[in-house]
Length: 145
Image 1 (cartoon, rainbow, N blue to C red):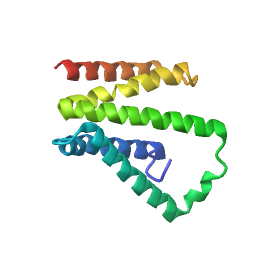
Image 2: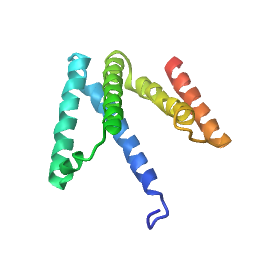
Image 3: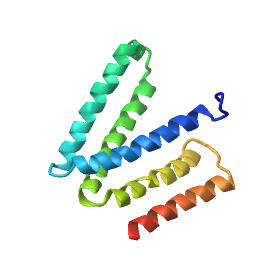
Image 4: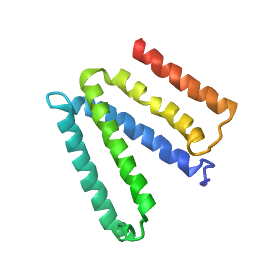
């Protein structure tokens, strides 16, 4: 908790949501008139350059040495999943409305909850599952609405 009583993870999660919303709108504007895979490639280059610069400026690039094989494997698999997600997301934005694509994309929240329980052994309360069901229903309503 910080001085305001708000858990730090919540602050970062809300910032992530805000930036994700900006991503959808800016990507929809940017994907017009260009192949969606090229748009994804340009976005990826920007991310690599910005994050590489940030790591270099903060001296964190040296922290790459102690990364173990299992960690590298899961980070590579995560990177491949991210790339596939981005390719699909940009293709969906190219073909559909951002206001419909982004909420359906957030079905990832539902999948994370399910996989978190099944794969990671995490636990969720009945209220938590209720929220997951509402997210799923909301995404479906947006998609068919």
